[in-house]
Length: 116
Image 1 (tube, rainbow, N blue to C red):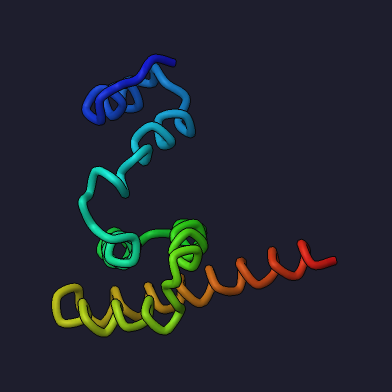
Image 2: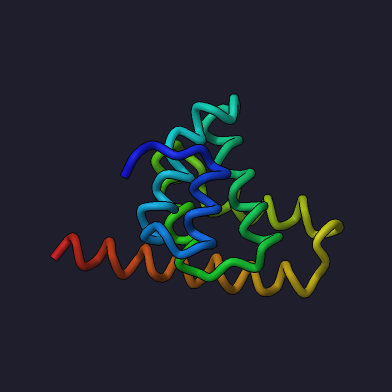
């Protein structure tokens, strides 16, 4: 697949012309560098976006795993929930907390499986 702009990748995805995972990979390629944020701020921002989007636990797991590689703790992720609660509302925060806990559980199971 040739390199697509984000708009082209979204258009291809919407029209069914590109495999979903390939398109998602392209959309995320180099976004950390292009964001201009430090890695910790970048991943904390992504966690806030996941809350706003009511993302599935697996999305949290992927992002929390990458965030942990840059030293972001579970406590800091929970701090994001506190910071954005007045904006997104209590119902969204409760759902996000459940998803975060689910993601941490997924990560724990994977870590245990890798240790065996």
